[in-house]
Image (cartoon, rainbow over all chains, first blue to last red):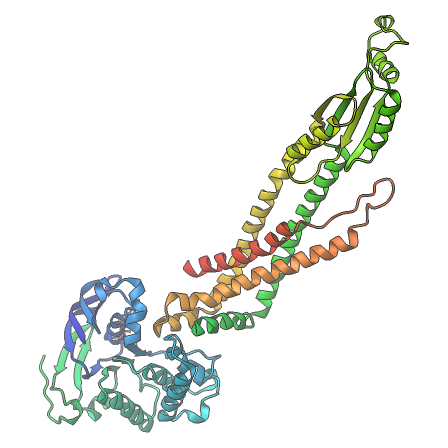
Length: 235
Length: 290
Ligand SMILES: Nc1ncnc2c1ncn2[C@@H]1O[C@H](COP(=O)(O)OP(=O)(O)O)[C@@H](O)[C@H]1O
Ligand SMILES: [Mg+2]
């Protein structure tokens, strides 16, 4: 489902990622940790073709990202949903419109769109705000809109960049519950976070630790990620 | 298809996002169309006017020497009634001789016998040009004149003088450049507005791409917006031109000029709407690409 081999990436002379390799099977859950500036966002951007792959190999949902023609990018992004660190939602559109956008570009019919949008919005506790302009929402609410838009399409792979960064503990737990739910239904999840709290709360998830662009630690487990209790780290 | 209609509606709705920028462009498009139309209107009217006053084809009709004067003079009356005739000049043999004599150098006059003119009855007819196939009309008219009893020969010549010939060439070669000029100016105006509305929609377009929108999905609303700007601008421009024409058409319509301005031919008026529309959509397409 997701294969990264010897991946490196530089911005000018600065190497933000150095020789990273890992792979995930369908339905696995990965916590990507590391302090700010470690390269988490860069790694995620490479996975959804927002940055070009220059060194190494990346295969996501069957797409070889190194040789991906530009017209295939929309198809890749229909398999891979992203929750962006800066949300990327439109302030002058309502919660409903922002969430529906992801389904509309796929040309689904209105009734279907309506049903799915309402279900997801309800699941994230945004129902009272559904017709509010996103610009009027708090940071935490906006973040939930971003999450709603990415999960509403039922993606094969979900990439989330600090999705709990602006949330209090209770909401963060609720958000994790949502990710977990999708994960249970077979979605492969990669969640980037600098919070060690989240790692402590989910010792059962797979973990990769990035430092200065390098994978410095991995906690690699079997399929029943959330039910496992043993912690095992090797570098 | 349903999605397509939705995108078209989106194109209409997007206009409301920047009403002022769109309105200014709309006015610019109308104004440019109006000016181009005005230019074409002048060309087209001068064209017709010059053709009418200059006359285009003349026929010289010669009768048999033995034709009876009475019959010839009768047929002269019918010549006046021919369709499209502008001027009829008739000459009896004596008149023709006098006319000829006045053009001959002094001294040679004595050679001509005043009483027994060798010249036949003659008529010169000038016709205004008609639309369509002038050559065919010319040969038909020639044949008709030859059927007049006792007519010996008919000669025709194109009377168009150098001025009107030159004008004709100019007016033929001016229409295309005016339309091309219109297209270029419009593409700049509409293209820039589309770029502007693109910049202000940058965030939306970025997000659309990130959630997997294909290029046509992003471009269709802009294309519709460009086409709409172009065609509405074109229609307003032509409407303005029509109003101007309506108020001015009788300006020169007094004796002895009797010059009533006519509006543009339908095909040119349509071009003034179609060109901005096509240019509008093309330039918005180009704006998205770059
Ligand atoms: N577009 C860019 N241009 C230049 N440097 C960048 C760019 N994006 C990220 N970087 C650098 O790469 C490093 C990793 O950044 P990032 O992947 O955003 O880290 P993280 O998401 O783990 O905080 C940082 O030092 C950052 O300054
Ligand atoms: Mg980051």
